[in-house]
Image (cartoon, rainbow, N blue to C red):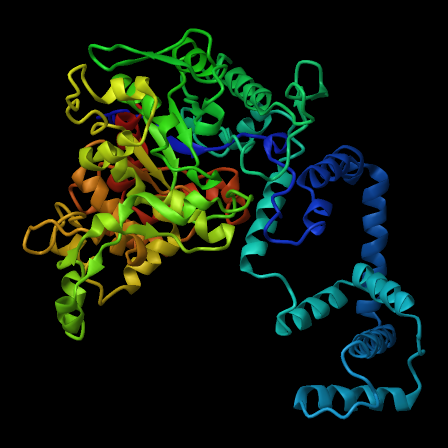
Length: 623
């Protein structure tokens, strides 16, 4: 008997944007000025495109193959000849000593009296080599640099030696810069594709032919990492200049996202992709202040939002049937910003899914921290009375509910004391922010701060009554499920009362607002914000809200997540809310998509894989 046909696999999280849409100074905040400007992404992309256009094709010529054969024969002569092998060993030894000699000369002085044992040992080795007079003395610092750099470029083992020494001396950049460098590499590797459809077609070849994909654009124009001045135009096969804003020298970023969306539309309109490609449109409240991008009217009677004909959001959501909204709060905004509220009401009306970035990553706002970001706009901390202070020695009570006796919470905003961009930008991404949309009492605090009468009309009736649960049914997906670091943190938190709530109360998880006795616990959200992992917070939000999902994009490269993923899928309230996604091509520095897909199918049962990759995405996308 033939098996019933399964629905197609749906990858809910892929990217196709080219390097042209990425601002040039991603290295800002990692490197000092003007170094980050020298490491311009646009320069890297131009070099790589030149390489792919002019150098890489030579690898497939007859002359290149002949040169490789000559190189092979030369290498084998040394490997097959004992005498030449010994000579090669002696030569390599001499070069190693020379590199050591010239390098150590910068760290120690021959006549100095060192107390440090390491420096004293290096000094003795330097003086011993110097006494043999077998290495030419180079007095010019510039010439030393030239010699060392030449050896570094020409000899692979010299590069490995230098890198190993620098790692031991902790001279090399930290892990965050290395992550950024890998991001540069991935954008660079795909920079040879000047159009988004070229990147998308590369992905499709790694999946079964009937696979569906959710295409997510990226609008990084407002992250303060430099201006995008030119983009590649597929129609003319040339780079076009982005027009400048009137009376300034600043490129008009609207044209950048408009051009990117035109490229996404080109994919959707192809015959082979019209049913399988489901693109989203990007939402950034700073961009949406431009009426060319987003404009709306409000029905005073119902509070319903209607998009104005001709704005970009209306054109792509309604005329071209784009499937949903993508946002990336780490670029410098909260998901409950005033400018986003009308769009969220529109999404509820039309059951449009929203995909929001929710992981601590390397793409984030690069400008200075603004004063208004020093405290949270909605959440409060609370003050502890003297009686509570006396009880804090009781570890069992503190672990169980430290916030049970907080008082006067409204007088004390949640302070966000992070200084570095990579740290304070996580405040925008924290999953608890979405409670300010999903929970009426928090949403009311947000709306109370607006001075826009149209927004007031969305949420209040003409007689100033709050419209019941206006955003409760927001269809939301936490992209990356908080991050693999947060999954590992959850597994390691064996003494924390809040993480254990997923096991003790699998139908609800954390109670964000009440203490163990069921009474309001002001300041509890602030404690969870500071001390509880994002995996626990996201699972609890999903369990308490019917239309909230999370995808496992990017984090699925790490096989460590599989056991916890299987445990997550055993929870009836969570198993229908997890979505498959890969984060192509960003995840490529870890694995290819076909490797990720193979790992997932091997690590999960067929039923589990089908649940997250075939069934759940169809509900999320309204298919």
